[in-house]
Length: 281
Image (cartoon, rainbow, N blue to C red; front, side):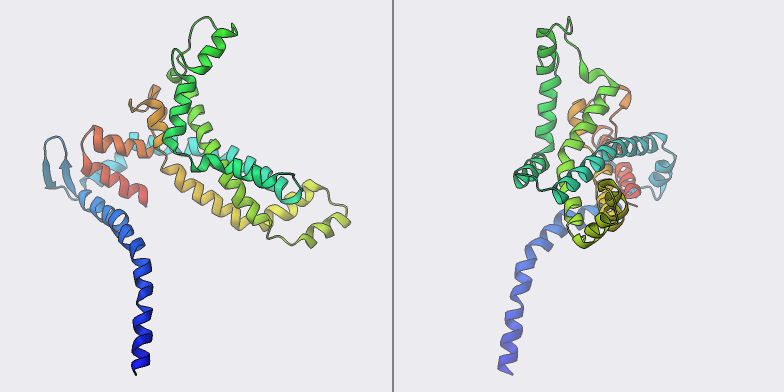
């Protein structure tokens, strides 16, 4: 009986090891979710300090808010274009490193993944310095080469803003996507490719008829995780526009940006919380 008691006591140490994760998760994960749900039913206005119940009024307003739905479609468009390039580039890189003996492949994989561990804010700040007005590196280069006569305000262009946001997102995440795709490809038995080669299949035929169908679960995982990250896009857009209402023609107002502006610019935390709940579902 004593031995059984000691064994149970030792088992309790496992809870101590996992406790830090659950404590942090409940404080910074569960509690904010519950708090947001509670605030979505209150007129929690930070400007006039009110805190009165409003029922489902903010949810009804959210479903009628065309600016909110416009921000969702804009977010999906930016993510879709970015992911098209990210996915294509990742698949090509994964195929090269999986089926070809590339010298220094480990170095290249590390180099491709490096942008993923750099702060989004830092990368956005570097891009702003590069294209800044009037003495950004790009303006200086174009002026010195005689390509332009006077500096260009690149960040005043709707097209350039969206291009910069897409480029930064692609550059940061294509390395991670290529590693995930490569991991999926390495699980395919080599005998399948040898048999296809004996049957006269080309590299591209093997790629599209064997590789892509067999890594479909990995590709679905990549799409869903990328979509979740894409719907949360905020830092890049905020930095590129310097927090100025989403830039030219609100071209970078993503759904997260719109919710942020409702909460901290308009001060309506209750309505922003309701939009957050809608976005969650």
